[in-house]
Length: 313
Image (cartoon, rainbow, N blue to C red; front, side, top):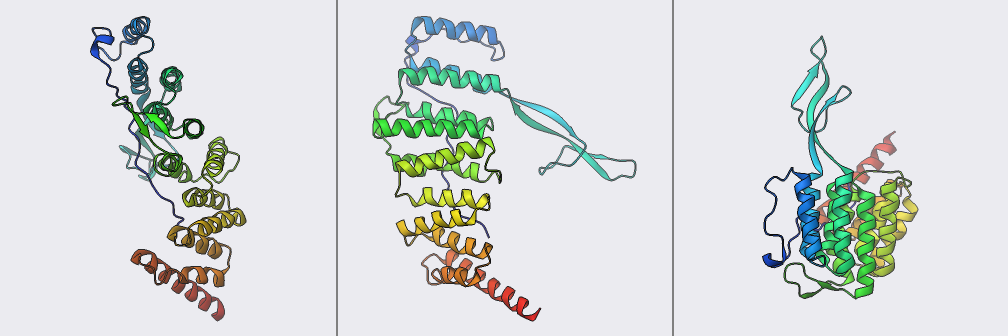
């Protein structure tokens, strides 16, 4: 049994902009690895048109593209979850570790990429693609605390501009209100962070995630998605009373939300409140959602079997 939340599509890292080629230096460096040439290229572009949004987007794309590097790892303790390239064996032929490849990120280059977007956002604070690209860079580099803080900055900007953004492709105004931003664009990031499995409330990523979710709840108090997220967060900390508060609030806001009902029932079951769990699951037995109805039926049967086994003991 798992807790439920909604998922949203990931945001692509590469940003584009319809800037006329005449506004750019004539020739790009041929070698992506020639950092010196690219720095000269961007410096020349900045001296020519420093307020060109495409300059800062191209600079971001260059540095974020240089940040990841594949490396070989020799792990003598345990094999990774994915299939290793080679399994290391001891003299008896038993698995003793693994040799495999992984991707690491140069944080200095990630920071340079984000600095470029920050320069662009200083000029065009309502460029939606720059905001989401900033968070995506941190997500890409496995820096969840920075990603959460970046998304909180985007929420704050939405509270200022009233959901009126600039589209990076056309340069025209677009409308993405707070609910759409939170429940469709930010939600995918939140789900990733909730799925990390950390149960330490004081971990930097968890602190940043709580601040993000608290800000969402402040700006969008009627969102069942936000309340469910907060419930999942506190359930991960095994703070079940606080988790129930949020799941019950989600149900109060949207009584027919299946996820809220399933989550309430699940937490009651975790706490050993079988009667309450069955009561909540029973609400879904006649649901129009056949998957939810079947899940509720199976959960009720399992609770009954466990109770019967305990009585026999």
